[in-house]
Image (tube, rainbow, N blue to C red; front, side, top):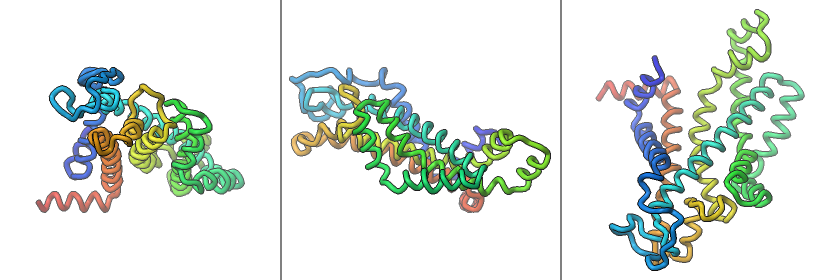
Length: 289
């Protein structure tokens, strides 16, 4: 079955998958098309129009500096998705490499990686550790990504290590080793393709966590620098106008909620679909209808 056919089959049988995919696709389209569909410059100030309610001129109203909230929400999607993709790729590649090497090598190297490194990073709350790193490094989008990668790779490493420990004792790996396959070939050709599915699911759900973490850091003033629009920074700016201009809180909060919900739904639906028993149950329900 081709990849396109597999995706169509997945979406046809999974309601949560369709909802998550539609929301994620809408978010991606908003981020990519923001320069063309944004109603105004997100950094342009108009003090005469400050704190306007949503209307024809400003779909989501304006903030305390008269900036168009709709434009800032659209451009904020670009920041959130860029940070999320960068963090998930960085955490995934780092954790995958370290976890695969630890699980494959075993022995003292595995004990050091698992007991010392992975447990040390997982023993601290991720958000608090990210706040500490971001405060030490200072604000900026690159530093936010670095802080989230440093604090987030351990979960991927533990998952990759567990998968390698399970797969490396299977018959086809033992057969390849007995035929003289090198360690690099065993890792890249035999182990990696067979442990990617749970890593990709973890990455999909991790997108939601990365978006939420970036919004949290920006809300605390440790994220992207002004005047770059960020959903978390917009929520921070709206704190003092919660009652006289609630639209300043509602729309950025809805954007964060939609993004987090989209990737969580997509990741959960994908995990259920890749489970043969759950997939068979979903298909039987579809046939019964």
